[in-house]
Image 1 (tube, rainbow, N blue to C red):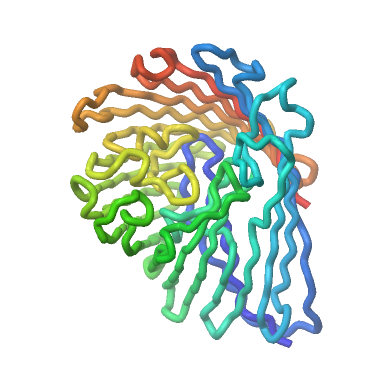
Image 2 (cartoon, rainbow, N blue to C red):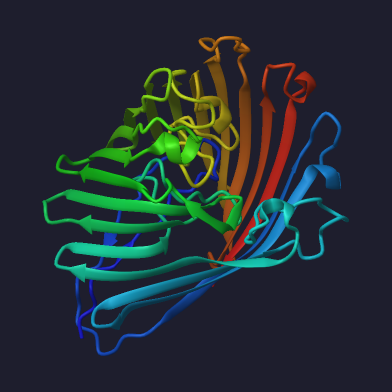
Length: 421
C-alpha cells in the first residue's frame, strides 16, 4: 500500500524575544511503499505561569497572576483507508488547584466560558482528513496554519497550546522551487479560548492564495492574497456590502551568516477611512555563539485600531518588529524600531530585545502622540534528552501615556515548561 502525500505544517513560534521570523515550509512526503499503516500517538504536557503588575497589584500577587496546566494528546494515521489519512488532537486545561491561592485566572481555557471559566475543560482542537494526488496534498478540517504561508491566519505558539482553524487547505509543488497554497478558512478558535470555535467571516469564510518561490539560492519570495466577501457586514455589524482584500508580500535573502528581509502590503476595505498600508525591513547576522538583528515597521492609520495587521485567530502580527507584548502598538498608526541580540550559553539561549515607537498615534485625531517602548529578556533551553523545553522571560513596558496604568511602567514575568512525548 502506498502512503499518500501529507501536508505537515508547524507555525513559527513567537516565544523568544525579538520574535525571529523564519520560513515554515510545508513538508510533503513522497509516496513510499509500506507494509502496513497505523496510528502514531503523541502529545505534550505544559505548566505555565505569568504575572504582571499594575498600578494596584504587585508582581506575584494572586491578583496579578494567571496560570494553567495543560495536557494535549494527538493521534495521526497517514493512510487510514484508501489513501485517506486522519489526525486528531484533544487539548485539556486546568488550574490544578492554583486558583484563589496563587492565581486568579487562566492564561488559556479550553471551555466555552473563556479565561473567566476556571473549571477544567477540554476541546477537540484538531480533527482533519488528508489526501494526496501526485504533487498535491489536501487537508480538510480543524488544523494548524503556518505564519510563513498564511500571515493573517496562523497558529501562535506563545501560549499553553496553539490556536487552530477550520479550513480546507490545498498545497501543490508541481512547479520547480515553487509552492502554491490555497485555503478556505471558515472558522477559528482563539488563542485565549480554544474551546470556542467561531465563524471566520460569517458563512462566506476567507479565501487565501499564497505563492512561495525559491528559484534563486538563498532567496525566498512569498506573496499572499486574502479575500473576504461582505467582511464589514459579517464582522463589524455594518450593512455596506463591501468586501475585504489583503495583499501581503515578503522577501528574505540569506547568504552565509547574514540575512535581510523586506515585507509590505495593504488592507483594502471601503468601510475604512483609507486603505491600510504597512511595510517593514529586517537585517540580521550571526557571529559564532551570538546573533543580532535590527528591524523596522510602519503601519498607517487607514483602518480601525485592533482590526488591521493582526491575524484572525489570535493577537499577533506578521511584522518583523513583533515582540512579546507590543502587538497593540505596532499594528496601528506606528513607526517602530526593534533591536535584538541573542547568545547561546549555559545549555540554552539568552535573548535581549528592545523596541521603541518612533511615532505612535500621531496621525489620529486626538491621538496620544506618545512613544511607548518594550524590553524583553528571555532564556530558553531543552533538558531531559531534549524532551522538555523550559522558558523564562521578563518584559518591561511603558506606554508613555498617563491614561494607561496611571502612567506607570509595567513588569511581566512568564515561565513555562513543555514536555513532549
